[in-house]
Image (cartoon, rainbow, N blue to C red; front, side):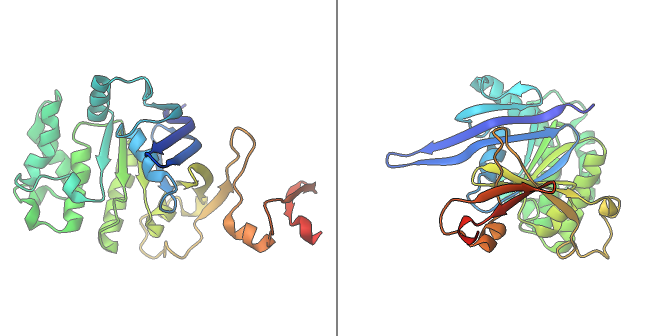
Length: 295
């Protein structure tokens, strides 16, 4: 049985200023198994980037519990956190400037993280990673000679340089064209087939519809999950499918540990509620929600 790569329970994050407190995460629960490729979606301010930063060791939770690859992120000291960020997680940012050093060649950029570890045969491994992302022919180039899509592919190679247990990607296709976005997804897909656990935050509709498991965050909590339909599971690389338009996934609301569920906004709008009260009934094996003022 696969082990849990990520185990978040009742995760809370509060940002404080002199005037206000912002509750970014409100008791988020999520389990991601080792070897999964999972996407996180949500509107701006929903808490998805906060959650990704916590998993990456870039931010500290305020309450709850968070384990990644067996490590308790609540109890780590600064030295342990440095080792965690170096050895456990790899990060691909949307902004290539956070991944790449312009005065180094492509090969030197990929080899750089290996200097912080005990990696042997650094050059050979860097060339292998560049070949995997289709960029070995550009190994002597500098960043100003490459397109945005090429830079993003190199960023993936850099994130994998120290063989992380978990690969994190923040909007990896956000600044590239459709062809390059498809190629980047194919790279992630091949990595996942080889056993790499990957967590992606994305607004890319086509990308999210190709992923086998999509988690939606709303108001700092998991609101729903979408699971790829079996009919599409073996067709991820087909160019004949319009991934933006076709209904490729089944969507499920998520019941939290307290028995609460977030009702989709479009359903609430159709109920035309005047206040915050709703009638709940159980009929013929189904839970029925209704407007009490309409009964």
